Structures are given as C-alpha cells and as structure tokens.
Length: 295
Length: 196
Image (tube, rainbow over all chains, first blue to last red; front, side, top):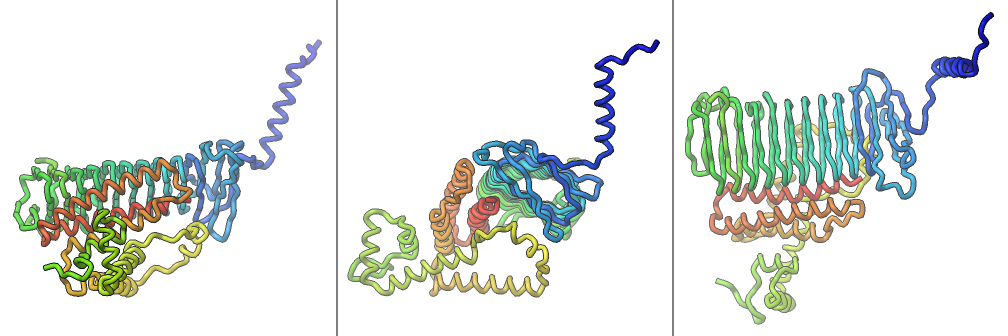
C-alpha cells in the first residue's frame, strides 16, 4: 500500500510547479528595475546617489534602483538618447540611493551626481561624469573620458583615449593610462603612471604632482604646481629635452645620462642630443625632483 | 611724478581698480570718491576700467550660462566639429580681444605687467564675490571647499604680484600669475558645471 502523500510534500510540489511556470513567463519589470533597447547616449543626473555603470555583452540597457521607497527612475528615449529621470519621493533628498546601470560597451554616458559617487567599468565610447561632492572611479574605459568633481578624488585605471580629470579639492590618480592625458586640481596630489602618452598636462596649485613611467609624449608634456612638488620618476627620454623652471623651489636631478644646460629662465636637460620630446616642469615655490629609472 | 587736481592727486589705475572693488582704505576711499565727482578725466578712466573688468569677465573668464546642459545634449552631439580655419578664426578673434583689452587698460603703454594682472585679478574677485557661489543647489560644504581654494589661490596671486613688482620682466612670474588667475576662473566654472 502506497503511503499517503503528506501535506508538506503537496505544498512543496505546488511551489515547485509554480516556480517552473514562473520561469517560463517573460520577465516582468519591477519598480526597482527597468530596461531599454540600445541607445547611443545615456544621460542621468541623480541627486544623492552611488551609481555603478558597467559594460556588458548584451544589446540592451538595464538599470536597477536600490531603494524604491526613496526614488524611482523614469526612462525617456528620444532618438538615440536615453535619459533616465530620477523621481524622488518628498523628503528623501538625504537618502543615498544606489543605482546600477548595465549597457553595451559602445554606449556613451553623461552622468552628473550632486552628492555620492560614480563608478564606471568597461565603457569604451566615452564618459562625461561629474560629482559635486564624492568620488569618481573609472576603469577599463576608452574614448573621451571627462571627469569632474568639486570635492572628491578621481581615480582612472587601465584607460586610453582623451582622459581629462579636473577637481577643486581631491586627489587624482591616473594609473596605467595612455593617450591624451590631462589632470588638473587645486589641492590634493596628482599621480600619473603612464607608458607612452600622446600628450600630458598635469597641474595642481598646492598638491604634489608625480609622474611615473614615461614622459616621452609625442605632442609634449607639461607638469606644473604652484607650491607643491613636481616629481618625475621616469625612463630616460630616448631623445628630447626637459625644461625646469622655478622661482623659489629647490631642484634635484638624478639623471646621469642627461646633459644639463643653465638658461636665464631655468635649466634644461637634454637626452640623446635633444630634439625629441619636450617636457616642461614649472613651480613657484615647490621643489622639482627628477629621478631617471635605471640610474 | 604724480599729477594733482583741485581735489587731491589723481588716483592711480590700481586705486581706481580698488575703488571699484570697494577695497580702498577708509581715508583714501572718500578722497577718491570726492575726486571723481569733480574730475571728468578720472571718471572716464574709472568707466574704462569698469568696462574692461566687465569685458574680461564676459569674454576671458566667462562662466557658462545656466542653460540646462542635459536638454541640449542632442544638439551638442549633432554639432559639427569646428574646422581648422574656424579655430584659427576664433584664435585670431581671441587675440584681437586680448589686444583691445590690454590697450584699453593702458592706452599709453605705461602700466606694468603687475598692474595688468592686478586688474584681471580684480575682475575675478568682483565676479566671484558678486556670485559667491550662492547657487542654491551647491551644497554648503562644497561651497566652503571652493571658497577655501579660492582664498588660497588669491593669496598666491598676491604673493606673485608682489614678486612681479621687483622682477617686472620675469616671464616665468607672468606665466605663473596667468595660470593662477585661470585656476580661479576654472574653479568657478567647474563648480557651475557640476551643478545639476
């Protein structure tokens, strides 16, 4: 005699059946998520948010909202431009909402966050991102990358293209980057690690500006700090000149292969007879230190 | 040799600039004000500086307008890239404006580079003070950060100007002042740009 099926078994079977049916139904959007077909450009400007933008290998754009009691997203697709509009519930401006956006790597992004953070991974076609108060982190990116904060650090790793990072108060780190590089702040250190940039411009007011790797930029390099130090720890230039100009700063050069010439406006180091890359280093009161790797 | 008028000596360019900023001493301020009431030449000079300040502010260190960037994105994407000749034209126009500004500042070619930069600095100080980052959307702590940075750079500019008085022909100092002034303008612009 077969044993009678118990109540728990019946419930379990029913649940499994429902689950199987549910998995066959088309995915339904919940208030916390949404999706769209491809767009050339995604525009998003939330108030108080931590936003993660991530490339994926699908032809669609998908977004999720971490806290739907505070905010919801509304999508408006106009031509190739997808604009995500944050709809805040009254009195929730202080709540930081986490958003996650995934999109094809060829999508361009324009994002502006008032307070919070932006993280970008893998987008190849260009990013313009700004945060008034908070950090921006970008990795594995390409195209035109323009990053701005007022008060917050900017970090870029493994990127190429036109990289332009600007902040009033915040450290800037460009690590393993190539292309046209530009990093400007007022206070906070700037560190750039690069192999062979096309061009390079780094400028701080009171922060230290440090370059590691190579400054053999085809279109020239300039590094400036008013009162902070300018430091180079680089491969000797195959050929080229480094111009050092300071009003009150100390100069310390450790490059045995370079030929030093004094000028009325400063000092010039020639590598390989000069004539190649041109590098300009300037400070008012900050020291200038150069160390050639291998020396 | 300083010239005199029936109501005291003519104010210098620097004094007129400071007068426009309300930055003269308690004694000298009323003197200059009284002098201006009776001296058409100095009034003209003051108006020239005021218009120069406006010009510098408008053309050289113009802040972006409060246009809604996001609604304009599509148009921006469609905008054709400027041709090299257009860029040359823009550069020539900018150079011409810069030349006019400098000549207006100093028709006789007598003012020093320090004087020139001081007027530019005044323009920026006026601009920044008049706006004071009072954008309602700018968080207070952010505003404090920007103002602190502005003060830091202002102090640096004053140090550079003092240095330039003793070494007026040093191109490096002129370059450093230019950079510092641009830094201030860029900070203001950046604060605006990041305002949603």
